[in-house]
Image (cartoon, rainbow, N blue to C red):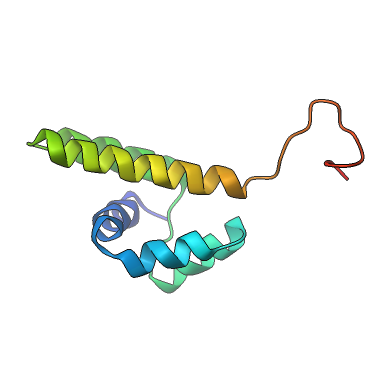
Length: 96
């Protein structure tokens, strides 16, 4: 897992609708990791954040920065939807 992989993922993800489609079709974090592994792009969340901030500082046009921010929002939403729900009451219905 490297920042370089995360940087490559961001650059590729902005252009490659097939890669985004495969990630959107994943039903678990494990499947997301499998897609990234197959593409030789495995990275940690810290690597992604570092790569995002680095690339954001290199944006020379507002449009490029906005596109990068939108990509990060998509990625964050995708990852959050895969995380298990946390129940405040620890009921047996959702936290079995």
